[in-house]
Length: 135
Image (cartoon, rainbow, N blue to C red):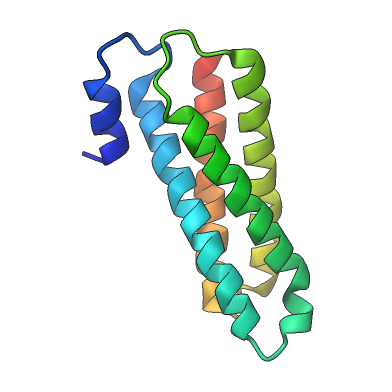
């Protein structure tokens, strides 16, 4: 069992969101942020770094947004403000998708981009599943 799930299970109050879905999203976005951070460094090490600028920028944006989303999602609240959380999740899914698309463009040349794209797709899917569970 993941630490995210353990922390949700240990919460002394009532969580208003499906805990397994929330935990899966936290885990997927944490993995996505880590993959994007590593991919940024790998991109900077490539000989064709000038061709990787868009990928680097999207990875940086994805890392920031995933990290912020994880922080907010990790605050177990009995009454989550969906007017704030829903747009955040939608933005997170969008940046994960954009970053995955860009990384997929380079995946045939750079294994690190393939791995990052996979992590971004997982982050996007988990985020969309959480959004669906909140409806």
